[in-house]
Length: 341
Image (cartoon, rainbow, N blue to C red; front, side):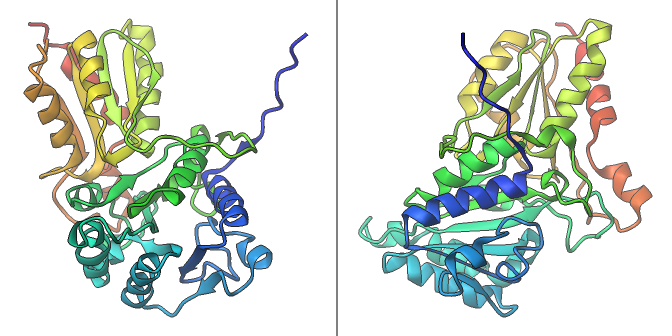
């Protein structure tokens, strides 16, 4: 008789911390640096327990100087270490972007492949909790636009552990984004669907490979991070109306798995892309362009649901009015279903 393996549900924060601990155990070249990542265990919990286990030589609290410790990480990577740094909020990228896109992203190109840059930049994204325009952005397209960077964003704890292990083993710089609303920190609230079974043994989730998380035949909804859960909520709500929604978790912004989206839309003929980053020049537009360039015959115009091109408001009523949510996805799907050409 086969006995099913026990389910071990973790939050994304705990899954990230477990992946880091497991890889650090087997690879003493990994060093973690950032603000409050040591004694506190990270503001978002993803380095909890690492200082006690690996000591202050490998888990280093830094001064509030993103330029300093991220630039140092680029140098460490060039000399054979595998640094992990935390940019606490992606909104602060402006003070350290030169180190990321002029140094880390180009190191392999400028050295003709002789000097790799195996480093991971962890950073929080997303709004919804009234922290205004300087602590709530996503900026997926800003990083996904730059050659030399890989950019990932998990929607579940299972993917968080697998993507983190893949990032730690990659020879290229990886921007590991995590959405605050999925992290599992009680003070932020947590989307329940992000807390999933996570195997204890190490495993990888391939960077650059999307997942069909719900199969359907009428319309494709593509999203990432929290918007995957908005899509799943919409699919469940519309089932009673006879609308069969396929939901795709993009998982990776760069490289973008265009093939999985194109294959889905060839089947459904309709596409809704949900993106909580700014609309203009954004990821949603890139996904739609990829489908159109592939010559997919559409039964309705594609729909792009994204944050409008304004700074994220502070007032909760205004913030939630502009952020994507399940109700807005439902409305977008209904709009797509109204046309059948």
